[in-house]
Length: 398
Length: 233
Ligand SMILES: Nc1ncnc2c1ncn2[C@@H]1O[C@H](COP(=O)(O)OP(=O)(O)OP(=O)(O)O)[C@@H](O)[C@H]1O
Ligand SMILES: [Mg+2]
Image 1 (cartoon, rainbow over the protein chains, first blue to last red):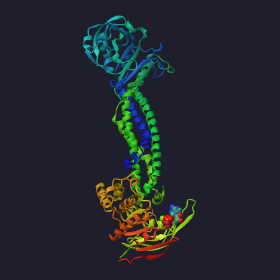
Image 2 (image 1 turned 180 degrees about the horizontal axis):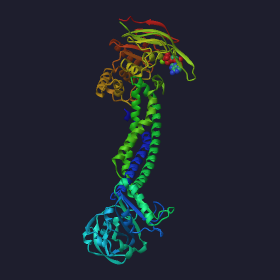
Image 3 (image 1 turned 45 degrees about the vertical axis):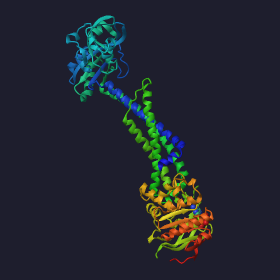
Image 4 (image 1 turned 90 degrees about the horizontal axis):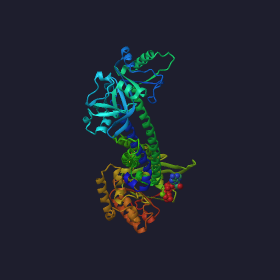
């Protein structure tokens, strides 16, 4: 019965559903964006231990790029100083990185080169795919040996990365022997994607490739997440003392912990989601007002019918339910169309630069619940009015 | 024989939007027996429709007493109870038919069954049966706009019968029909009376009123005369 009533006036039905259609497709997109952003963050940080603490040169708290001020006294040797004085750290390592030309055959591109100390790979959860890692003796050397990230290895040697081992590539114009290739990792650190980097011993990077142009980063692993704040204070204290900073002077280094980097990334993704959800909610409320409007018109138009129904025995509740069902059907029909529109928009939006939306049942469920509640909420008042009409007055109306 | 409707000093006023009080029924004393065919007559504005609507529980009374089938319903205000009485005990027939335009004759007739908790097949087979009896078996799928006035009125009569009510209330049922069709409707009513229904009908037409057992005249909101045509068996 409710459905017949809707079909009787197709154009009006469609117009009143338009708001819901737009609102619901927005919800689908919003949830797709939200979950997409979340997935990206998870992917980005999945291999990073939450206990890790990163220390970089340059003063003034967090944020910004990796620029190192000339005044910074941060050195690779600081790792040992910190480790010997600290009680809350289980390991520490340093890296020295910058960009340089990497070439092999016809391939020649500027890539990130990272000079690494002993235990760097385990600290950042990088696994070997083929070949070998540096020996502890090589770590301390200036040998011209290199380990390739997954992406760069494939660029240079094709999908069969084991063929890379033993080959000679040119780094910064000098010949380096490939001794290993890393497994795909997915992490892009603040500085570069590990998959698209080449790794050399620390001193090789500092003395033979980058000179003073590289950026130093110390990486510590705290004993557990719970001691992270203590450990960070400790590191700060030790470094300040070692760098002989006056108590009034600012730090000449910056420190981050992986956990708060993840959570700040997450919270910015969340902010985005909240913002978009607010937009979708507003659209849905406006669409609800549209439905309410149409329902009021419908009730007025069908006043006589309501009188007839009451005369033949319809209760207030029956009338209420009938009009509520009609409103719900409007919004549900609109909702279903909206879901279809939203879902089919996802692949199109994903073609846009910088967009990443994910299909999700959560989105469909939220959209569904949203549209039903819009129908119930905004259909209720018109339905209530209909149910309260006096039967004799209603019968008399034209 | 027992009385099905009993009224003592029933009063009813309307209030205009400016607050003005319009007294319409000024003390109705009335008794209608089971299986009686009663006609209400009187000048326009004398309160016939108002009285019929009170009998049919579409209106409540302001003061006085209304006993329906032995139950005092004077102060009954509960919507569910009133709706149930209208649904099961009353069958309404109106001058303007009051059919739902977008529904077929069959759906219109079946509708009271929906509010009586009958299944679709139950109420539609009952509707089919009544429409057939009333001579509309070939018009069941038609919408009201595709039917003549007389046919529409017969559809509305069929609808009034669906839940087998004890009382049939008809407000000028022949008012929109030509006299021949009006007579046909009266023959149907006579048939219902034979089957035990109580019929209360408002009319302005003396030829139509002749079919009743008794005529009740209203004037200025009061019963002025009971005129018996037939002696009830
Ligand atoms: N809703 C209302 N508000 C105000 N006055 C009303 C209302 N309904 C009816 N009346 C008044 O009550 C009086 C009786 O109306 P009612 O419809 O009962 O008369 P009636 O006897 O059926 O007349 P008719 O033969 O013309 O149908 C009339 O004077 C009418 O104007
Ligand atoms: Mg009248």
